[in-house]
Every structure is written in structure tokens, then in C-alpha cells.
Amino acid sequence: MTWTVILNKVSAIIWDKSFQVTMMYITSTTISLPNHTDSCAPLYKEENPLPLVVLYSTVLTLGLPANLITVFLTFLEVCQKNVLGIYLFSLSVCDLMYLGTLPLWAIYINRGHHWEWGSLTCKFTGYVFFNNMYISIFLMCCVSADRFVAVVYAVESRGLRRMRHAVIISVMIVVVVAVGHVPVFTMAEGDSEKMEEKRCFEPSLPSVVVTGFNYARFLIGFFIPLCILIFTNLAIISKVQASTGLTPQAKIKIRHLAYAVILFFLVCFMPYHVILLTRAINFHFSNGKCDFERSIYTPYTISLGLSTINSVINPVFYVLSSNSAHTRIHEGLRRLRRSSRSPSFA
Image (cartoon, rainbow, N blue to C red; front, side, top):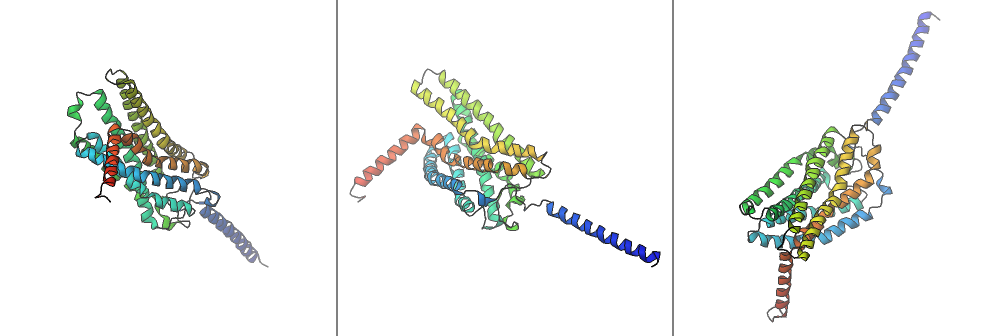
């Protein structure tokens, strides 16, 4: 056997082994590479869907009639040129739109997080959810700011609190929030049809776009509104306590309502936004791994459930707790009783 043949055989063996090792490396690397269809959520077969389904069903059952009543009452206030009624009416309409999406979320969770209505419906449902949350937050700030101006600057507010201004502000809030959340339609988390499990906006591998979005939502959508709510409601409490024209019972009611508004805001929105901030910060240290995302998935789902409760509590705090709302409800019930007793009703 010549040296040429020996060298050829050795070269062939080395090349074959190198090719095998290279292919094994490429295959393993390809498998480990993340893509937008990979979810960082745990296995849903190990999760009990009943608590969230019950929560969404309860919110829908209580929130739908409460907001329908609120829409009617606030519409009457708008007809009477009540500036505060503009914000409350817009808030109730916004909550009604969100409540209309709860059946889809409840069915989705009950079916093991399997979305069956296509990517466009998934993105639109998520779009409505995000819009509702931040329109509600900003309108809550408007309600507190309007009360602050009316109480603290009672004389000067006659020229500031106008129906036209309230309508313009409400429309601007809706437009800005709606435009700001248009990127939801481009997020890969909403492409349920491209995923094998057909999931809709579940936690996935973080990206630069989503991280920047989370920073903005925490700062603009939560922290700044929280500062506004705390400042305005504490100023209202201080002004009311110094007033000599209110009874002690009225002062206590106003103080409790102001504290309840702040507490309700923190309970409903703080857990969700703290998790958003934590996920954004973790993006810089995660190195493309899902460990952190999986560890906070359960708190994340709990925070989503808490955020839906605002659709029920909004009418209670801002309308049904007011004296005018009580008066209108009692008048409506009295009219209904009178009409039920009359022969024409029979």
C-alpha cells in the first residue's frame, strides 16, 4: 500500500468524523435557539384553570349590570351638564367593552390555554384589554383631578371645569392610548396560528421591543398616575378636614372614599406593573433564558386577575357611592313600584 493511499484513507476518516461533529453541533445549536413561538410559560396541564375562570365569570356577572346602570346614570349627569359625568360615562363605556372580551378569555383558560379563534381575534382581544386598563387609569386620574379642582379651587374652577374641556380630554385619552397600543398587532405573542399550542399573549422570550414597552407602561401608565391620585386625594382630604361647612359624617365619608380609591388602584394595578418592571429589568441579565419568566408565571396570572376587578369596582367607587346616584336609583325604584301597582301596568 502506497503512502498516497494511506493518506487518502486517513483524510477521509478525519473528514467524516469532523463532518459528524459539525452536524451534531449545528443541530444542537439550532434546537436550542429561541423563536417567537417558544413560550416561557409552564405546562398548563399542571395548572388548575378553575380559579381564573370563576374570577372572570364573577367579574362579568357583577360588572355587566353595574356598568349598564352606571352608563344610564352618568348619561343623565351628562345631560344635566355635569363635567364629572363625562369622565364617568367614558369610564363605564370602556369597562363594558372590556367585559365583552371576558368570555373569550374564560373559555381560552378553561381549554388549557388553547386559542381557537385565530391570530387576528387574539390580537384584537389583547388590544382591547390593554386599552381598557390604561384608559381606565387615565380617566381615574381625570376624576380625581376634577374633584381636586372643584374642592381645592372652588371659586376658580368655575372657569376651568367646562363640558367641552372634559370631552376633549376624554377623546384625547382614548386616541393616545389606542394609537400607543397599535404595536400589539405586530407582537409575535399574538400570532396564535403560528404556534403549535395556539397560545395567546402568554409570556415568551423577552425582546428589546417588549422590554421598552414594559418600561413605558410602568412609568407612564402606572407610576405617574399613582402620583397624581395620591396628591389629589390627599389634598382633597386636607381641604375637607379644614372645612367648617361639612358635618363630621360627611368628612369621614369623603376621607374613606379617597383612601379607598388609592388602595383600590394599588391592589388592582400595582402587582401587574411591578411584574412588568421586573421582567424588563431581568431582560438585561436573562441571556435569552426562560427561568425567570417561568418562576413568575403564577404571580403574573394572579396580577392579571386582579386587574380585571377594576371593571366591577369602578361603578361602586365613582358612581354608586355618590348621593346623586342613590337618589336616582331610589326614584327609579319608586316609579317602578308605582307603575307596577297601577291598572295600566297590569
